[in-house]
Image (tube, rainbow over all chains, first blue to last red; front, side, top):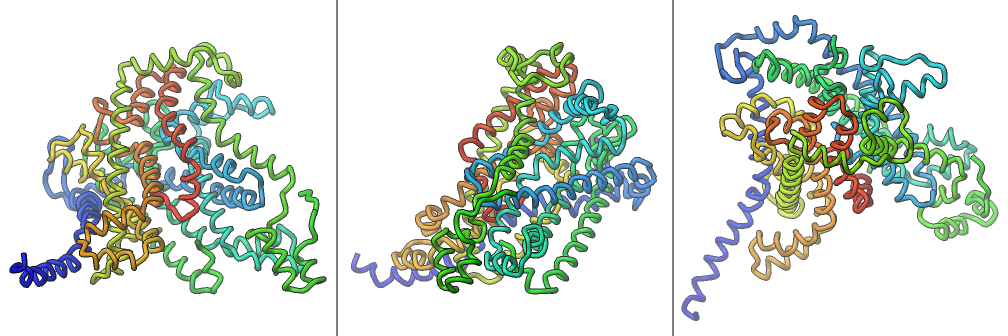
Length: 316
Length: 308
């Protein structure tokens, strides 16, 4: 061993230095490789597919330029899907935000059995959207549904949840709200608890009542969190598929496509009767661009609000 | 809200006994001074309503799953007492033409493998980002965070073509592989290890002649345990409830539970007790899990989890 001693440390040193220099990249590589393969590449390749005749089974055909886009946009269903997607998104995002903040404010009080109530609001989060959709589509059944029966008891005529455009959107939005309100409530609750309590005391000294304090102290401090929740809700909400897909057993979004969303339209083009991957990709790419544009608007708003004042630092 | 003040308010203390006394009083009343008063019954009524809205739809599914078609048709509002047919309906679902047992096994395999893999690779990357200085660390981390905002679901067509070329359509690896590591997981573990893993421990392991991978295994991985458990939970739930991609790539022969539920709806839509039995079978495992570890999910979200 003694003879090996002089030669070992330099070798080990060199390997050690290599270890320190190279290993970090190896450790982060799995994410980047996987994201490149199943995230970035498919997105970019979507643009390529969208410029070709491309059949689900037949595969790649001729280059057709923007023909797929022209075909897709000219179909009235495209406008319907766009309208439905935005309508369902707004009906779910806005009430959900308001409800989540309100419930968080209630939970922020010094209540007993805190963990129990917090778990209670989170329970719907573990229910799969497909399960939520089946339960709610029965609750919202046009005939002999529980909600219409309850409405009948207070003298309101049965609503055609599976026929009317707006009614179907309300029903589907309620599924989204059911699943995500509690989750967002906890995010807001965490943000509320990070608000320095001195601010509340100061408001109290200034003679503000609870309502005034809530709107003048709590809500402004929640602004970064509100923006965060809106951004994530937008990215997810505009791709909504599960809930409207299972709102009835046919899964086409209703007889007149009253509740067919953009992602359902994408699926119908690619895997439905047409089996046109080219057109499906065109819809995917249009929706992608739409989400990016809305994301950039969000980003710009966020920056303006963040630089508008130091009160933007209230987050977690 | 009606609230009885048992103690003088902090403001009153401050005015009568000075700031120091007010601060001491605030300390005595715990860290959440300011909201220290117990709220009145109105608060609990409100919370009760919220809880009812959260839980009733699930109980409703169970009520219908324990009933039968004619009872359901006659009573739009089900009786709060379950019917006698629950086990019978569950047996019917498991024995139906839609292979729920396969779906149950598939969902379990996918969720477990995904959760273990996400935790491992995310902790590995988080360890590098949080504790190993390397060139490009900052921009690469920003990149990881930015990818969370990319709607990758919209790459579904090329991803399907890719799986088709690999011969993976209808096979579980088509669902497992794309989810093996997530940006959220990397971000989550980076944040946690940044606060919970002392640099000195790593230095010590290095001085002892540990390779980096040994340092990761013996020092970082044990330190990451609490956050890793939460990440595993979130990943498990996300995987168990995931529908769109499994629906596209798996097809009816080899479904996961959400796909099986959709198949059940498509072919047995007239038999609501059967459909709801399917809903209960697919949801019950997560509800049981929730009862056991819901506390951890709550604190995970409140410590900055985002939608994965």
